[in-house]
Length: 116
Image (cartoon, rainbow, N blue to C red; front, side, top):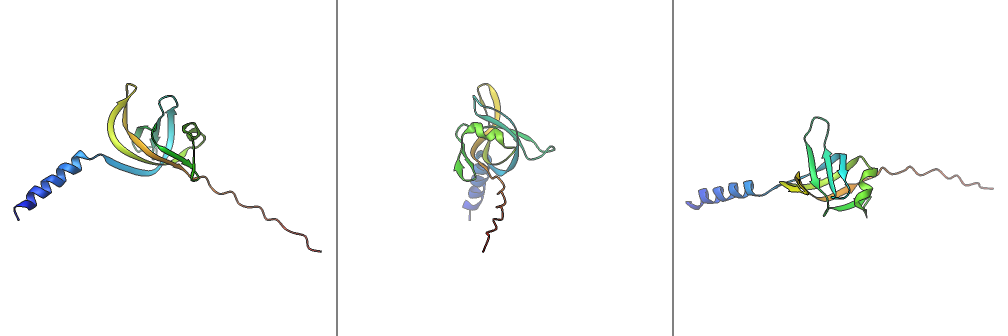
């Protein structure tokens, strides 16, 4: 029973030491192509995050995509790790590990066949 407080203290220490993972839908506010950084936010009243996206797996409708293609879209599904650091002298809030873009399906046109 004496190990229980030690175990609890260890868990608390690990929880503080481990960076937070965030996942959700975000609005793309801007970015820098050369350093592959993006600025995202969930909505106007929510905090903005500056993320390093240089190592992120980027997909559009499940297919691999290039970083420059991100700027064709305004809504991104982003998975990132919150960890303060800096890149190229710019303070960043974390590193994106996955960026997914899902485009709405286009309705199929009704093709009527002529019988006769």
